[in-house]
Length: 567
Image 1: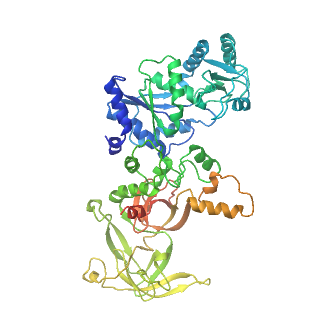
Image 2: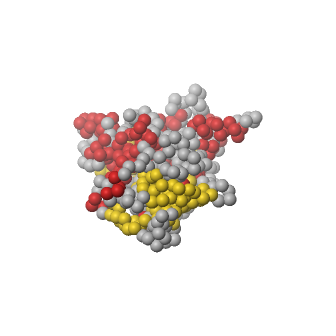
Image 3: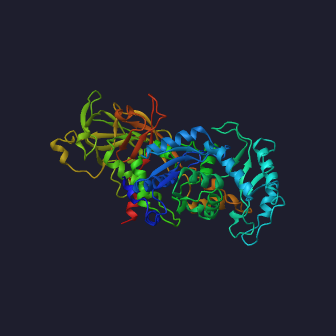
């Protein structure tokens, strides 16, 4: 059992153990029930760890079920990707189900509720139903069609199924209590008409069960003992229990238990909003590395172990809370630090020429991949007359405590020589385009002269080793609250403020692209391979890479600002 599965439960475990001890259940079966209308995100990963972790801890089983009752947004592409993500996280389901496989049975159960007199066909328009539902302080009003005969309801419901009525013209409602203090219990809709092609059943059906009807029944049909779900479904629990009981599942009916959702600062955790980012073209797709989807995190270089470690540290609670994004980065950084080989890449290059180094001279250097793992081996780098450093590592007029390259100052080039800036060259715009340095020929790393100390050490690449590369640097996709408020104020100054919109908080600087150089070993790597580029952070090679241009996504920077705040 993984560490996250050991930590996965607290109060949920207490409920499960209580149920087993009391004899309420003689086994444990859970389920993970995504709707195939998008990619799984890290919030779903929390539910995955809980659902599968509880089942595994108590020797039970966990099903994978696709709650595909709304064909307007569902697609087989999402079905395939969800299965891929679950397997990538290291989980294996017991049984695979689709709600659509049980549409015939759900229809029969709905007919049974009509015969019992606890369901009826309503002809009210959606607007009339909303108006008559009442408010939190006022009871609802019974539908004028609430007392239809069983025979008429059965006939109308069958005609709904046969496609005789247009979308929105009729619904099947449960007959519960229009005066209930829980608005969800005020005769909720359990079937609606929807003439829409379904990804699995095609055009067989033009009526579809509502989630609050299908979901509890599916749990009961599959023999689920503990239906674990996020906190917003707590108010749905009375309806969940009503549906199960009215359908006749009275022997070991499933028990719904709610837990807090995962909320991460400056992270979109709504599938509806994620879909909007995709459809608006703000991101390149569901696997854009800025997205919180598991596919995006995998593309960015996150490992399954790092994600599960993060979820284990967050834990499971009953009350909602906000998690710092830095905690996730710290888990990823800790995971990558030990396993990623070190190489050098220059993201924003500045040319350096060594005036006392012969043009045809090449010095071959042996450089290790990881200081703590000699078994990773070494690779060869070449020191030549021309190299590249980061533009930010040179300053024409250095500020105090700037220990990098500047006129008259010395630095060591990692694994090579100590060099001194003698002069520099500017272009017509006044920008420095070349730095002229001298090399201390006695300071080669590994030689006796290497003992001379200088304060700064820079990464670099010679023109012989520099391979063209593109680097994609990411920031959170949402602005901080204060920044978003400022932007909104600027846009609406002198005007009446518009209603807050999710897109107002989207960070316009969430992606920065830089063109530079990487080592050949990184250029030759496969998509998905991860590296630490010295001083620049951890990076993952992207599938967009070509033979001519390698593309790298920065997974996380090296600086661990979150850890510092915990001291």
